[in-house]
Structures are given as C-alpha cells and as structure tokens.
Length: 126
Image (tube, rainbow, N blue to C red; front, side):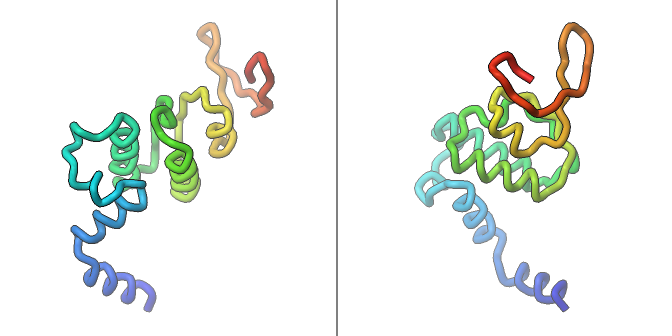
C-alpha cells in the first residue's frame, strides 16, 4: 500500500518541482537557482556538485576534503545524508569533527604503510 502511495505522489510531483525542492533543501534560493553555474560562488558550486553526487545514490564514495567551501548547514546536511545512505566512504579530510561524526574505522597512511588507528584525536594527530 505504501509503495502505491509513494508512486502516486511521485506522479503528482512534477520533475521541475522536485528539482526546485531539492535545490531549496540544499540551500539554493529561488534567485540562485536561476543563475548560470558559472555565476555561483565556490561554496554554491561545491554544494551543487555534492547534491548531484548524492542524487545518484552511489554505494561507494571517494571524497577528498568534502567540507571545503561548504558552510556549516551544508556540512551538517552532508553528514546526515552520508549516514542515512549507509554507503562505504573513503574520506580524506582535515575536518576532525566531520570525520568523527561519520567514520567507523580510521586508517592512517604513513611512510608507505597503512594501519588502523582509534578515533582519539590529540594535538599530534591520530
């Protein structure tokens, strides 16, 4: 029954309206949605790229500094969506708060060696 309702709602919500809602949820005002991508700020471009990636619903992410150029609400949204999706993620980041929020295992690559470490952060690193 729920599947039928869901399909019915999807039919009622047109694609353009769905796109507007997704962009608004990602922090894009109606004005920003009308701009060419080339006129968006670096942070808006980063949010747009991450939104496009999340819409593809991959089961594996390879992310290099994903929180760069993203404001705090954008970072929090990314955390929520990555955790909800349950995808495997290899992440390179200096944002310890973000890493601690989403990571379950920590690997340190040092001098050509990889080893698992705890998520206990100190002033010298993991």
